[in-house]
Amino acid sequence: MERFVIDGRKPLSGEVKIGGSKNAALPILAATLLSESPSTIHNIPDLLDVNTMILVLQSLGVKIQKLGPGTYHIYPDSLNKSDAPYELIRKMRASFLVTGPLISRLRKAQVPLPGGCAIGSRPIDLHIKGFLHMGVQVSMSSGYVEAWADDLHGGEIYLDFPSVGATENIIMLASVVPGDTVIANAAREPEIINLAGFLTAMGARIEGAGTDTIIIHGVRRLNGCDYAIMNDRIEAGTFCVAAAITGGEVVVRGINPLVMRFVTTKLEEVGAKIENVGEDALFVSLKNRPRATDIKTMPYPGFPTDMQAQFMTLLCLTDGVSVVTETVFENRFAHVGELERMGINIKVEGRSAVVVGVEKLTGAQVTATDLRAGAALVMAGIAAEGRTEVYGISHVDRGYANLEEKLRILGASIVRVNE
Image (cartoon, rainbow, N blue to C red; front, side, top):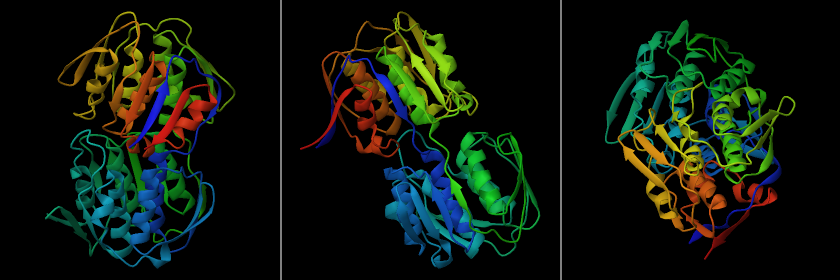
């Protein structure tokens, strides 16, 4: 069985280069369907989730050519199917992002209800709410969403929660429907800005991306373009935590420090030293035992739910009591049970976890239950005394490309074993 074997307590040092963003690549790949002309996309990370999205596009008839590492040429003119396959959609929630582009190109879509990590219900009702406001008719039965449209138009949409996926799906469809569409309480994540940049390069007219009100002026058609995916701020945040949890000194390169404030502010609160290195890198070090602090996950620009598990692992080693509150997903404390095998002291009460710091973690056999839980267990392993074996690492491969290789470059003792 495939697993990571980690011998911990080795301070990390050196530089690590951050790769392309999974959460930016997935909607941009879906958005290539909006045009009939080809696009060339650069900096696409080699991840299981990205490979799944590529398979989804190919299952719809799209031809895709890999030009080199991270660069793909996508030919959407061959799109000939409106029904996405269950065996692919069930693997990853973000695959539902093809729905808006399919409605735009073919005026219909049949997409199974999506799957992915078991971290909460993550309903698609906000996606559907947006579609309905633009003239789409929707039916849900037997685990499928069927959508069709004869008279697409712009609309005014208020999202009850600033859902990233719903914001992305609505922006994509609204870019090529007649009239103006306004999304109020829109998601503000940098990945939204990256998607809007891609659509704008294709000829879309979008205002306000990165704010809570986005206005899309529909155009008749979009054209393919040449575009690069932003780098992954969650991968960067994970390596910042890795530097701190091992008492190391690491330069995390290839990321805008401004989009990292959600992590760096909290790292400074626990006692880490953070320095900007030019415009695209951060220096992170922590020489003393971390101090306790509280975190509460929130939509951007708040502390991201995708960093909660990793940061909680760091808080396990503080000299005090911390409280972690999860407001985004209801099932995102699954890693706690596995961390308990390594000697942590955490009490979960509803959507909050009280973390009582311990002096050390001890290596153990643990299993990842989702992507970020897997990253947290790796963080625990590199900080723990003794050997840790992390099973279920296919979850980790969904969001981190060559994680073990990058950690080894920084001095960690981690290998991938398949036996």
